Length: 265
Image (tube, rainbow, N blue to C red; front, side, top):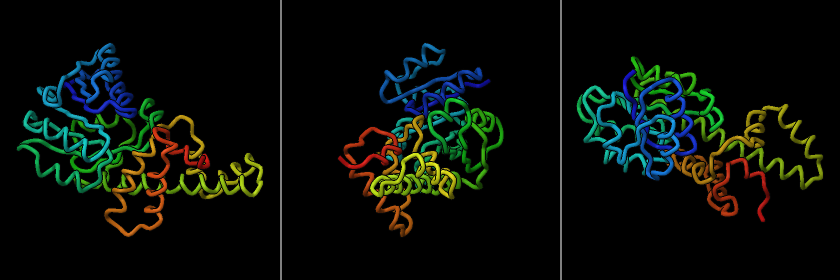
C-alpha cells in the first residue's frame, strides 16, 4: 500500500484517519493544533510538522478541514510540495466554487477529487459515511474512499461538493423545523414522548432522528458556515432565516446542531 497523507484531525478527521490505519495504510498526518495528532502517532501514524512535509512522497492526499478559508491556507503551504501523479481527495465541505478555484491552482500531473461526506462522528468511526465523489474516482483513491463508506459517483469535478451543499442544508433546515415543532408541542402542553413518536412516524422522520441524536457532533458554527455556502448561490429565504438563528445562539456555542431543540435562556 502506498503512503497516504491525511490533513485535518477534527471530530470527523480523526476517526477517518483511524479507519485508514486500521486497514493497514501507511499514514502521515498533520493538524494545525499539533496535539491532536499525538494519539494517532501512538497508533502508528507519522506526524508531520507542516502540510508540505505531510504530502512529500505520498501518492494520495486527503484533506478534511473546517471550511474554505482553512482549505485555502493549507493549499497555500501544500501545493508546491505535491508530486506528479498525486491524487488529492478533498473531503471538506467547501462548495463547488472552492473546488473549481483549487483545481485551477493544481501543479501539472496532480488530480483533484472532491469527496465530501454525509454522516457524523459515529458513522466516521464505523466506516458508514456516504461519500459524495466528483471527478475521476478510478484507481487506488477509490479503495481509500471506500474505507470511509459507500461511494456515490456524482459526476464531473465539483459535483460531489455541490451535492453536499444540497444535502447538508436539507438536514440543517429539517433539524431547525423539528426543533421548533418540539418547542411548539411543549408550549401547547402536548405529551413530549407522544409528540416525538408522532413526528418520527411522519415525513420528517429522518430529521427527527437527527434532532434527537446524542452521538453526533456538528457544531452550530459549522452549520452556519454551510448555510452560507447555500444562500450565497440561490435565493433561499427560509435557509437564510435558519442561518440567522444559528449565528444568534451564543448560548449553544460548541454544541451539536441538535441543541437547537433547547429553548432560549
